Image (cartoon, rainbow over all chains, first blue to last red; front, side, top):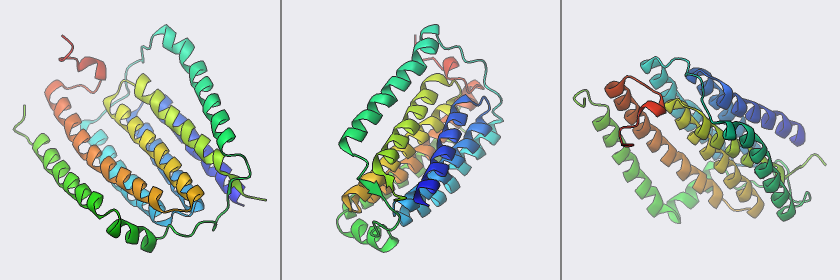
Length: 166
Length: 102
């Protein structure tokens, strides 16, 4: 069951990722990215990260992607013009990408042989209570810094998106 | 017997990261480039959670949480910048936004 779920949602994630790169219209890319994020949330659940899976759906697929879609529709972004990549990139890019992925796969499989495996329920320390306890004790200072960062980001977004700037 | 090797999760993360890099390098629309960055962040999050499972510690989840926070802040500021660029230049093509080039 784990294997089937992993394969199905990994295939959805990779398919949506490829679709993000090859689609010409930004709306199609954004919807593909939502597909990637949704299937990643299922994979997080398989890894026992319940809180992160919920946050992934709410924050990423919910909030951030709605912001993206809103901006795309606000700017009425159309189909992008022909991609004029150089001939070198076209003929060398994909083989080099495949080579890179092959090397990474080789190294990862050397470091983590197949007997190091993931079974659903093998790690149960990823619920909201566990994450919260760690977050508010050991990682309290980064948490407060993150709140200041968000405040600054809000101020920056408001200042940048003002009407007066021309 | 139906367990999944942890290396598959890491390889999936590498594949998604490479797709993000490809989109970042090849696409010309500024919003799509930005979405490719988000895809790369998501790929890294997946390997954080996978390592967290491997080490049986919750620290990787905390890191993923902070990556999400930074991504949210980055999306807000970045999209505001995109709005301003579009207001000033009426274009979303990154090749046409080149005033710092010469």
